[in-house]
Length: 231
Image (cartoon, rainbow, N blue to C red):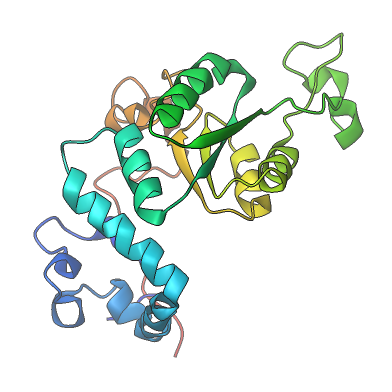
């Protein structure tokens, strides 16, 4: 049985063969090891580049040392220290300035230099990117666009070695990641409705947030990935 795409989301809890290193023999038909073993094999040597190897190695070590013990703030501090970074950058939502100040203080207390840039830096009117007045959060007046490309450029220009995303909107965070020359991590994601805890929507997807489902929701349990029609 073959499938088009890797579909780890459908892997039964009783399998999860990659955790035991047995994907090649126990992985279901839609397992990446079954669907596209070539791409997996091509990805592996990329970790042999010295900088990538150091990055991946330190990420794994921090995971092991702090598993179930450290908050994400502590993990960021530990990882940045292991990487030898001296200057960190924070790209924050304008509504998260107070949190950015606290995070900056914590990072500075560990000896880091910190630069921070809020999303409205540059105060560019939304009209300049084609947003109509009726499409603004509050129509009828000046409303600056979020400016994640400028955030990335500013942090890069001022020597940040590792950037921390703090509450950027969907899409704006994507532009930041694409523009940032320095590697970046996420500290907080934006979810105005759920107190910036978007996972709650999945936890309650069959009860309070049943509206999340589209018209093609399966009546029973989630369907398995479709079989390949290619020959």
